[in-house]
Length: 163
Ligand code: PNS
Image 1 (cartoon, rainbow, N blue to C red):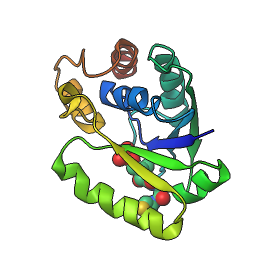
Image 2 (image 1 turned 120 degrees about the vertical axis):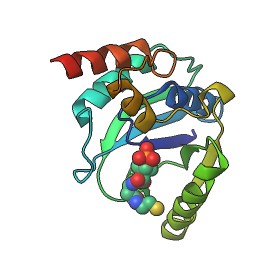
Image 3 (image 1 turned 90 degrees about the vertical axis):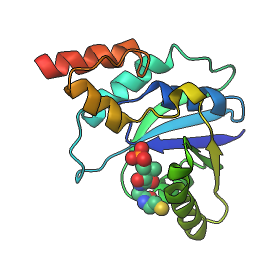
């Protein structure tokens, strides 16, 4: 039984995240999509909203026999992973520019919890430039975001923006 944690802000979840989860499902029996509770970072969606959206869009992806659940966590990722008895952390790497920061985190996490492995996965090329930050930026400036996020995310972003 191989369990992985896929941690992140998911504000909002993008098609790139979903692509990574689908790929992760080929390697793990269970993936916990873990939303970081970070009171210092101003978020677009609340943790509850992000969790609700993730739970819904995850129904649509190809999971095979992999169990995919959604949770949130505070504090150290390695501590959370230990509590969940996870074997690995999954992170998506889009470009070389992601690598430096991800390598630092992976090595710090390894120092803190040597038994926990970090697995880097590459999303499909079509998502290699997609980030939650840019999706929010172009959305707020009036651009189309279909194809970058699941339709539900776009719908919820419009609703939230227009009250
Ligand atoms: O989607 P993000 O914002 O790039 O995800 C970053 C995340 C959640 C993976 C990272 O900030 C994290 O693990 N935070 C938890 C606190 C922690 O353990 N920090 C030390 C990391 S070496």
